Length: 290
Image (cartoon, rainbow, N blue to C red; front, top):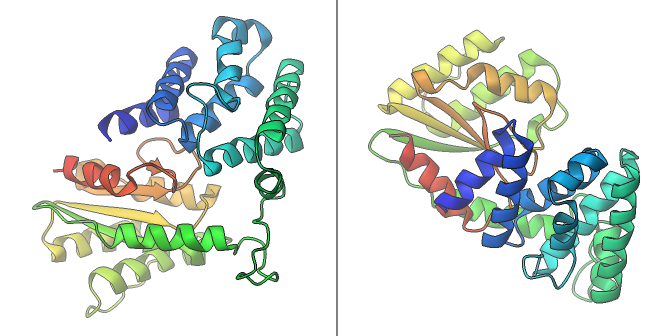
């Protein structure tokens, strides 16, 4: 877990291209199905010029994404993740000639080596219908999504506080499309108080400063040096990320971790929902805040 955490931080935060690519390579060796490693490897293929790609072992990166390679994805989810990411890049039309050729090459090999239904499910981003499953499940609420959400909720209930740190998992699905800063501040404040201090009155928070002050008050009432907010069930968007960056402050014991595939920069932390041993890596992060 420590190696995975360290390599993930390098991929997300390092400004050095070579370091980020090497971190992605070693993360793939440790966990061939790691979503962050797969996304980073594909990012290298599409976002760097040919001379840079040559310098940073372009062919090795392409090879590592193909089915059957020693460090390539081995699970159904891992292989489907590669297909989904590649399709997303193609739809954005930000690829270079090398990237386009590599994409076609990789996708063709998955089409040849995967069961048809698995490839279809990944390409259209929805599970194929099973006899026991209704065929009218709306997009974004598939059985796969529901199962993953249940797993994450189960994991978060197992997190343990330490002598100095109080972990607080918060489902912020209600903020998925919210861009009003006042509404975001108030909703976060309401969720924190309703979960951490259910008997206390919920204060008003109309801006970042008020929200931060109320969170510090909650932390003092919990009698902990650190408060670890663990956000989930919401894809980060610009306004929400800005809000979290305004209130996260390690110097005063306010820390924010997000369960998401979206790369995040310090002071925020992020782990993908498919992270191996997700409970262990989050608990390690909590323990290290002491």
